[in-house]
Image 1 (tube, rainbow, N blue to C red):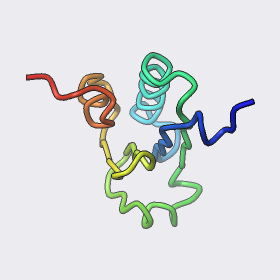
Image 2: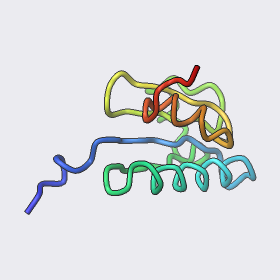
Image 3: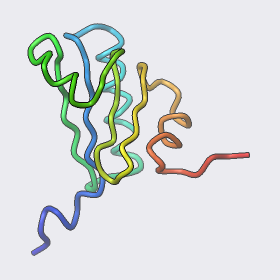
Amino acid sequence: MMELDEVIKYELRLYVAGKTAKSVTALTNLKKYCEEHLKGQYVIEVVDLLQQPQLAEGDQIFAIPTLVRKVPEPIRKIIGDLSNEEKVLVGLNIIPVSK
């Protein structure tokens, strides 16, 4: 039996503020990309800053929605509704930058 730590390679945290259209779109897009490219290798934590505003300070969140890749390091942030798949995948370092 495999340990959970051996399987999970990506720890992602999505900061939102309630269920706005952009927040819902960002989460939908993120789940879709993860299922297509990281199936079984990721965890997504959604942080609603309306309920937990103190958590924004730790990751220095200044805009929402913001996606933070916690693991693998280095930490990376992507702001917006994550509708540009290539930008998100490159930003998360899942695919290389195309020329």
